[in-house]
Amino acid sequence: MFFFNLSIKLILIEMSTKPTIIITGGAGFIGSHTCIELANDFELIVIDNLYNSSQQSIDKVQKLINQKIIFYQEDLLNLNKIDSIFEKHQPEAVIHFAGLKAVGESIQKPLFYYQNNLNSTLSLLEVMKKYQCYNLIFSSSATVYGSQQSPLREDMDIGQGVTNPYGQTKFMIEIILKDVCISDSRWRIISLRYFNPVGAHPSGLIGENPNDIPNNLMPFILKVAINNNTSVHLGDQFNQLKIFGSDYSTQDGTCERDFIHVVDLAKGHLAALQKIDQLSGYHVFNLGTGKPISVLEMVKTFERVNQVLVPYQLSDRRPGDLEVCFCDPQHTKDILKWETEKRLEDMCLDAWKFQKLNPRGF
Image (cartoon, rainbow, N blue to C red; front, top):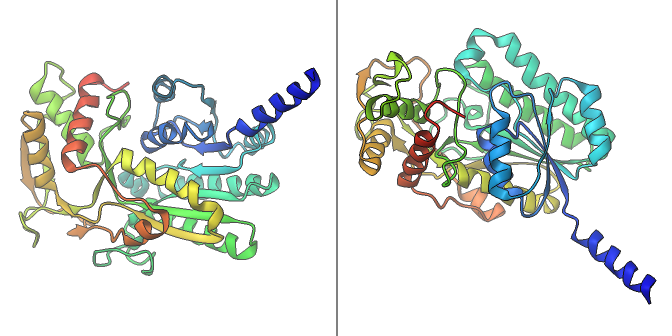
């Protein structure tokens, strides 16, 4: 009777074991929020070289989910180390966030971006194949659509009019992933094309924390707000926000973008993982709201809901900026059964809460 009960217990333990997922770049802005959404259903292994992130984000995620994340500070280009991680943990799927992502830096250092983003992905695919891990979710970008007219749909051609090496690497990797799926029917790969992630976890513990001067709108708004509404001074470069272009043919003359709350974006990865077994081959999905919001509307909403001042200056257009960019999210709703839930007000409130709790970053 003892051995029978022990056998039943072991079977129950085995049945309750959660699938193991490797998350490359899991200490970053989107990666850390995605870890929170996956924690209930998966054992998480994070690989991150911390080039533009901090291990403190992993520590904070562990606090929020009340469980351990296995973390490796490692570069995907270190093939031997990545091989040993796969051999030890035998993952069932990989979410691939890791990669250089600053548009301006990519223009200044194109070889650095091509070498890092392409070679790291190729190395990852080789190791996945070796250990028969054929499920991959790739962190792509709306930049692959180039300058096509919105709303942007997954069946549009990509790669034309991409204006920077960062975007080119996303396009090239998508082509590689598609070819890999054609070559071997065991692969199941989903590319998620992000639009403009903003916001932060409602707890305020984690959020966007760029190491240098921000390239994106919301992080710059946050630092200007800190400089003008608190006793913390981050430098004169954050005394006011510069808005590039006020003469576009939009409602208020400023560019319009598809801003999505990072928590909604993270939940999109969970939806993709839950569906990947039913989708053979290569698939792409937009992650966005489908509702364009102007730069000036973002600034005014931020000021209103947070009751702060964000001084700004209207400036000349910036070369390469699109007038309007937003997605058609219907395909993602139909197949992944996912859609956004957060409002623009939520994005502004949550981002400001994070910034106030972390005025100088982590």
